[in-house]
Amino acid sequence: MRNLTCIVCPIGCSLDVEEDPAAPDNLSVTGNRCPRGEIYAQEEIRSPKRVVTATCRIKGEMGSVRRIPVKTASPCPREKISALLQDIYKTTVSFPVKAGDVVIADWKGEGIDVVATRTFC
Figure: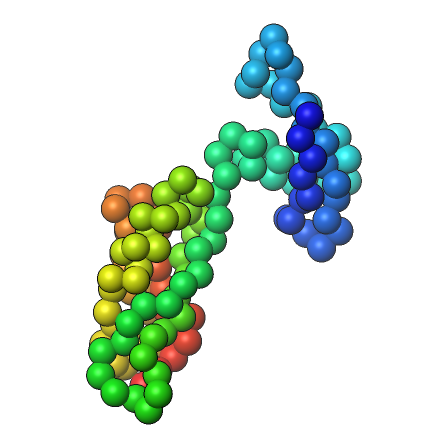
């Protein structure tokens, strides 16, 4: 049995997830107060994903700003986060950049865009 804390809403339900030994694809989820908790637990056990935040270099001079904050527009599979971060850290953005601008489009065909989270003009 695994214990998880649901992060879908502010309630933070304590979830107990148990696999059926006879049918590993069947997961039993208890402790959720709504159906979203069960969906979260199933995804977290089978294919965990995370929104990734980082910084990338910015080309040109703008006072003391040398890096710009970025994040993925959609969650990234957890096993691919390290490779994504390497690519983000290699990326250089040119001025001007606005919050929401795509810095890396469709990373490695995964459908994951990396976007700026702050405006620098």
